[in-house]
Length: 243
Ligand SMILES: NC(=O)c1ccc[n+]([C@@H]2O[C@H](COP(=O)([O-])OP(=O)(O)OC[C@H]3O[C@@H](n4cnc5c(N)ncnc54)[C@H](OP(=O)(O)O)[C@@H]3O)[C@@H](O)[C@H]2O)c1
Image (cartoon, rainbow, N blue to C red; front, top):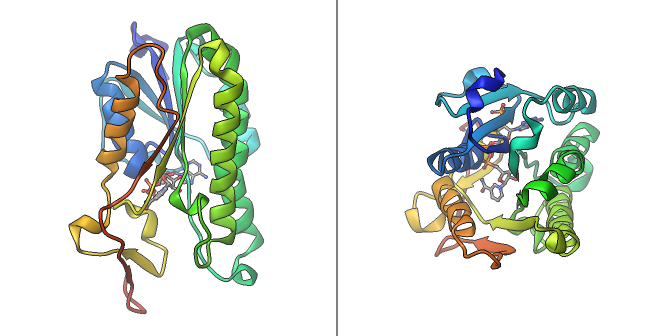
């Protein structure tokens, strides 16, 4: 990235910023004056562009790629916000999950957020910045075939709670956002998806609005955990052979 693009903006890093929840949060942060440095696997597929937005190609399951990206990060001192959002869900009986799928979920939902937070923490302390973790309702309860997805999200939520306690004395504010069914591409490879009933899912923009709400609190008040759910509970099983 050309660091001149940043001008005087504070930087927000958003993982999984190319679509869905990450893109909606990126747009919200841009509207609030941040320069958003996004990460995803396939930036070419992102349809959004803005002068305050860059999208870097980093596979968060590749520690070497992540390390190179961090080491070459320009304007590190301007980073104020981390949003750990990138994620993927594989739901199946446990023995049917492949090692690759298990490793991918652990890497995306636990290893990458921990390494990136660790790398920027001194900067965040100096800037009295913020960390957002995008958990999942699956991390708060036992759900069918959610053994690994739910466990990694439970771990992420717990990590967020730990960091909230550890960092509250140093000015860094930590928030767990815990969404339920959200209408995104997340379900593209799954056997179920959101129902047509518009009251049975939330929209990525609802989670972005929650980020705005967290950021608009008076100095000294932290919304440390928000669960965002649709009014009704419905999921739709996909017909075999159809998306
Ligand atoms: N949708 C839901 O119902 C729901 C509910 C609760 C929690 N969540 C959580 O919300 C977060 C965002 O989900 P979403 O619904 O917005 O999903 P999505 O539309 O499928 O978007 C996933 C994002 O993660 C990125 N990503 C995936 N693997 C990556 C990797 N190895 N390296 C870097 N980036 C990677 C994708 O990048 P590419 O575009 O390059 O593939 C994309 O930007 C996830 O953590 C998910 O677990 C979702």
